[in-house]
Image (cartoon, rainbow, N blue to C red; front, side, top):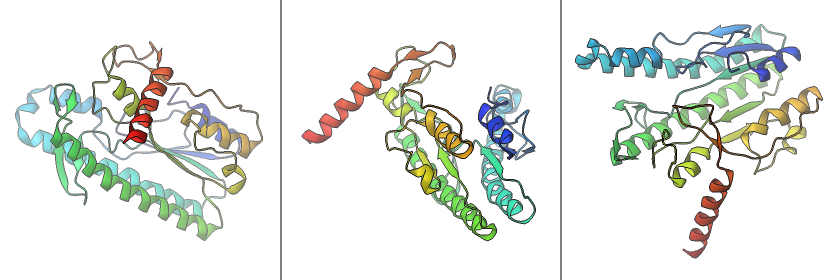
Amino acid sequence: MIRDSAVARAFQKGGYRYVHVDSRSAPFDYSFTANQNIDCGRTYPIMEQLIRLSILSLFPQTFAYLDDEARRHTLKELAALPDIARFQTRSESRPVFVFAHILCPHEPFIFGAAGEPTSNSGARDGKRWTTATNNAYVEQAKYIQLQTLDTVKQIIAEGRKSGRRPIIIVQGDHGTHSTDYISRVNPDPALLQERFGILNAVLVPDDIKVKLTDDMVSVNTFRVILSSLFDVDLPSLPARQNYATYAHPFKLSDVTEQVKAFRQRQQVGVTRN
């Protein structure tokens, strides 16, 4: 479903060229239906796991190589986006839909706040991240935030040259998991709140902007945009949160009420303080 995306097909049907930027995470590394797949690296997480379980893990330079490759891949993905916009400005008459899944600030934490090389695989003290891991996440998040903002500015600048206003969606696929393991059948309620809280920032023309609300859940982002661009009927889906473990990814549990209850307790605590 990811490699043959309904959203991408909708854009192609609407006359768009689909460019897929490969991710370090399968199955986002390739699209069967893209008009163009952009390759950004050589080593992927499944390969990393095999290497870490092999005799190569006895050599410290193995982990340094994996971290270096992850850094190169992330930076190549970011650099590809304004490059596509430049090509669009100069050579492409058709509009283009670009999808890039960037595995950052996801662990391993390999960037410092200034982009310097660091290394933290996501160590825990019990079920929680250690203080060092928390700090490493914050530093990497600072760096990738600046890189993302710079990338967005470059895309907007290229759009001005061609007289086209880009639509840009910067959307997290999940929040962190510093408070508990996400593989537990009965996770800490704090984890659910943490995991389901994501960034969903959208740059759209004013006629679409008025249809977006602050409480809109991410599952409806593309539904609103596609409905507006192609004048199709895609009603919004209800705001629900479903949880699953890695061991049973399709065994979904509706945790919407748990997430709401935890959020309400937090809001009450903030008000009292």
